[in-house]
Image (cartoon, rainbow, N blue to C red; front, side):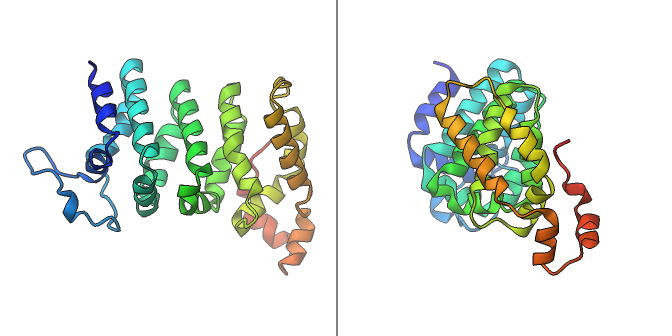
Amino acid sequence: MPCGTILRQALQHDTVAAVILYDESQPGEKAVQLNTVDVSRKQSGKGVFWQFFQWINKSSFEVSADAFTTFRDLLTKHKPLTSQYLTTNYDLFFGSYFNTTLLLSTSYVTKRQSIKLLGELLLDRTNYVVMTTYVASGDNLKLTMNLLKDDRKMVQYEAFHVFKVFVANPNKSDEVKRILIKNKGRLLKFLPSFLEGRTDDDQFLDEKSFLLRQIELLPDEPEFVAGRGQSARQLVLRSNSNDVLN
C-alpha cells in the first residue's frame, strides 16, 4: 500500500493530524508531545507540515498529486483543529506559503486544486475568522482578480468562487471597497461575458448575476471619495496600484 494512502488512513484520527501540524522537531529530536502544545503559539515554518508546500509544488506529478491529497485531508477532515491552526498561523500560512507558492504555481493542476481548496476553506463556517481576515485584504483581492483573467477556464471558474466571497461580504474593508470601486466599470464589462459557455450551470449563472447586481450597487468613485471627505485627486494618487482589470 502506498505511503500516502497509509498516512491518509492514519489522518482519520485527529491526534495524528495534530502531530503533523504541530511537530517542529528536527532529525534526532523527540517528537512533539501533544499535551504540551500551546495552540496559541505561532509556528516557525520548520515543521513537517510546511514541507507539504515544497512536495506539492516542486515534485513529480505523481508525488505532487499524492501530497496535495494528503494536504487537503489535513486541512478539511478535522475542522476545529485546523481552524485554530490557520487562525493562529494565518500570516505564515497565507502570506508566506499558500498564496505565493500554490496560487501562483506554474503547475496548472496545483494552481487549480489550490484555488478550489481556498474556496472551500473560506466558505466553511468553521473558518469564519480566517475568511473575514482573508477577504479584508486588498492584496488578496488583487490576486484573485488576476486569477479571473487566467488563460485556463477552470482556473477562472475556481477563482470566481473565491472572488464572490469578497463581493458578497457585507462588511468590506475600505481597502477592498476602493479596489472594487476603482474597477467597477471594468468589472461590469468583464463579468457579463465571463465563462459565457457555462450555459447549463444554473448556480454559476445565478451567482454571476448576483455579483453583477452587487457591483452595480457600488458607488461611483467620485461619490465614494466625497462620502469619505477626501478629494478625488488624493484617492486616485493612492489608488493607482488598485487598477487590476484592463
